Image (cartoon, rainbow, N blue to C red; front, top):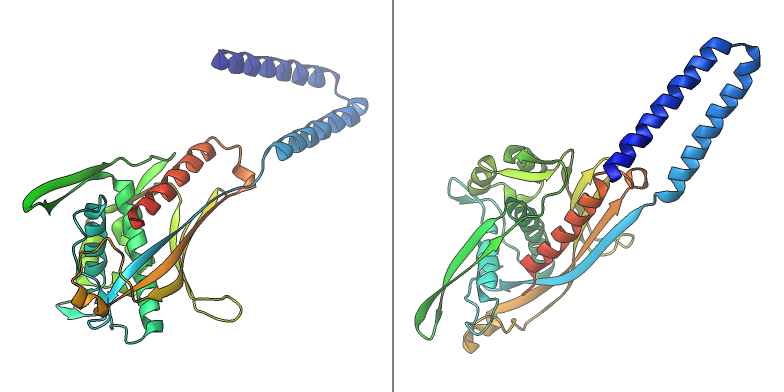
Length: 310
């Protein structure tokens, strides 16, 4: 029914436009010049006001906390199994092992990242590591697929897994991993042989014309604490900023991990707040792509939180 009405309205407009042009051509004179120009101007102003009043800028926001447990003696992320009683232990295992692997980039077997030696360096180390992991997580979420892991319960092996179905935004394209790697080059954890191999053999699915940027805001009296930002931008449509900020560190270890009491003193938990902000431009609020892009952003924010929260 809607399609029929659109076609009928379009036909009427074309018919009226044709008749109007015919009448103007047959009766053109200085007398018709002024009313014609006035009518066109009124029509343009009316259309501008009508559309301008119905479109508006919109934002989507979300926030959550996450953490990295560091081995203070080895100055590396914790490598430990979560307790079998934790229902999220497979997800925790995957996150812990990924953080540990990403924190040790090498070129021809030589480590390329200096280990932190004090609290400030550790916070910066963890923030940058989370920034890089965030990009990989988004790529994996967009790529879909499945994960599986083997754990132990009651002395017996148990297989657990999950399937990830991505949300497809309008005009989705696949960007070569080499292009993404260029945007990641400022992050020290992207510079190892393993990560270069990873990106050279994968693609990153994003809405057409979306670009990725990494930002670093050092701590200062004006800007506050140090910030690491993952930014996606589609000109005239949206800007997505995912900001990582430190909020504190403590000597306790989350209960999810199975750590011997005599080893607990080695570990410290560094906590971070993740703020996700998406701003949709006013000028394309009525575009046919916009509602689909908003739905995709809401899904993406929820999926990112699920990846990083136990």
